[in-house]
Amino acid sequence: MRSLLQTTKLWRMARGVKRSLVSPPGASLLSVEQTRGTLEVLDPPCMLDTNRLYSWRIRAVNQSGVAWSSHGNDPVRIQARWYNHAGESFGEAVSQPLPVTVYPGEPIEFPFVCSTPQHVGDFDLTIEFIRTDGSTFTLTPAAHVSLPITATRRQDIDYYDVFRTANLQENHWWVVGAYHSREHYERSKMERRSMLIQHGRLNPDSRILDVGCGTGQMADALMDYLSDRGIFAGTDIAPEAISFCNATHRRPNFHFRTGGMSTIPFSATDGPFDLAIYFSVFTHTFLDETVLLLDETRKLLAPGGCVIVDVIASRHTYRAAGNRGEMIVNADYFLRLAAVAGFQSHLIARWPWNPQAERLMYRLELT
Image (cartoon, rainbow, N blue to C red; front, side):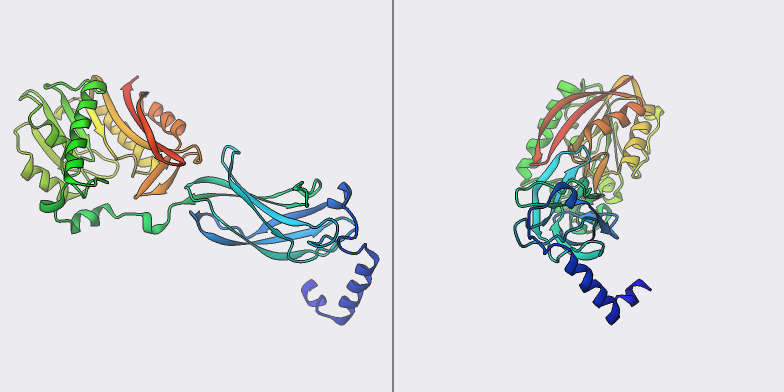
């Protein structure tokens, strides 16, 4: 009914009389009391992709006695800034002139365009009125939108499809990770073996559980290292990877079985295992899958056994954000999950991953 009345000639006449009684827009500097109003974001999305230009619909109500305008002695602008879940500002603030004059008592709606953060995480968008000197409207609370920023669909991967379509005889080294060359792959497996000896207490008689074994990089690294008393048990969700491992890494004490995203196809009688390894696994699993895998692993470990895992961590996410292509976690939240699963965590390595995240390697020990 209100919108219908606003189209009548009588309404427009009354509005013109009311506007003539207030000070002209921008005629003088605004006092604190003249910044009273409300600001809200209409119909915000539940989530958005990274680095996306998005048009927000803004509704403003001027509850002061003067008009607000982007012209005159005290021009008004609309400003947006992103904050992460911890309240830290992310990126630069974006502002634009107030697109229309806002008269007292007349709600208006207008678009405001700004980009989403370039990094995944849990963010809060704050939108507010500002003046020429950068100060905010004291009596108009900022509008807030809290939402997860996630990776784009093109960054996602279908792990099953990757192995179904790969020629493993030619590129088994390429399909399992971001290796630049066969030489890089070979160097990485030996570096990982050395790390397991140093931090995972690996020895020739160790019983090893490799979850997410892929085409058997670590099986290959341990073929000439494990004794006949040692055991290597590898599992992966891709049947093609397991078939390749069974055909390639042949030793009586080397076993490979197809598993699930949150299940391990071995029992304690197959071990129990002294060391479980998760190389580049929790960088692709969702948190519920991660904690289920840790719980399964705990049941398979021998007394004194440990787990080596790596994660990609960022302070910008409260729990986790991303997809199968790359899962980013909050390090503290991951450690709490590990504790719930019965593990005490020890950081053994860290290195930069991108400007907003780092890769962390942990040794998890039974509590």
